[in-house]
Image (cartoon, rainbow, N blue to C red; front, side):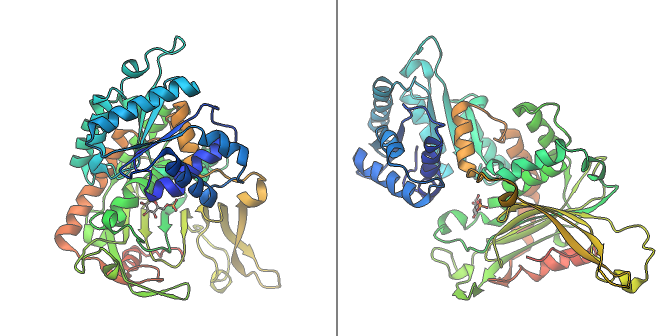
Length: 490
Ligand code: BG6
């Protein structure tokens, strides 16, 4: 694991490794080698892992599990351009193969800024680590595997995404590259496929004949925290719309895959992404904002431009909204509204399928004044579940109809708690199961959608300020109002 001192490694990756071990899903010989610049011994890295597990693991801490795991923890100190250090790394994993019977299978997790990917990948090649035959040779009659895991951002536009991929391509074959979009590891996201393709009742209404529009929201209450270096110049659209929200759109709008294998799933997602159409007028069909100082949960918080490390004239957006079309027979004319932002009133991700109104209401107008649009809402997080909203008669003598909700909550229907996204994804890397990892084609399609929007924004707009703790910039409400619609309340 490269980048072991980073936030992601400490808060998500190492705890996920422990949780997998605790659930009995890792082989006893599993070993974890950290690589970083710090002048550390194995014990220092083991201590860091211990602390991150203690603080962030999902499952209870058990001493025996930790002991077993910690015996396989090693640390190699070095810079990314240090040949000798990579040679030590190669020796370390070779020793582990001998000592712990790891079978010569290596997954390299690059939890590092993307600008270092080419260098690290070249070092893996130079030191022979990327080549199964160079380091370990055939073990037990089976050729060991090599896999590389990379984290977004996969470039910042189409051209840089291609360049990044070209760097990987020369060293690892496409099937050995695992691109993490952690939204695909979430139970509720995988459940979109179950909801749509394991049931009969939704399919007939899942189309332009019944759906008026779709709203996909990813709201966060947090600001950018200590991530100025990453976030400035990236912004909400590149950070989460290009990947997480477009993946949600793809899963919602795609056709049924012929099988549940990686190729079939990815093919259907790619078909939808290639059918996505941008609004003709980008000024009217997009909006972006930047949080200003305000109040969040009773606490006064800084505006984005006052955050540490953010230049006072930054034009990076912390909120973005888009109206997209999907040019297919199923979805022609149905807008998909996407919005994502930081410092909004609460943390909430959902997909809301908003239905057309009944073509005729045989009631007095006053009886249905309180009746909204029927909706099917997939609650991705928190409070995971699904809500169906429809009109119901209010008890009494009048025929008054009002919205009510029917609810499925994970917490009530299942006793087992959901694994963290990273548990699922790390396990899939180790067993070599690729359906939940976007391939390069999907990444490129995402940039094809976003690049013109980013260019338009850079040339003609400046993000509009919105107070922290509010629902976003006024221009996002205006975008909806022009279409005669409104965002769901946050
Ligand atoms: C990451 C983004 O991909 O997702 C962050 O880079 C964001 O900016 C995070 O905060 C949110 O993840 P989750 O799982 O909490 O919705």
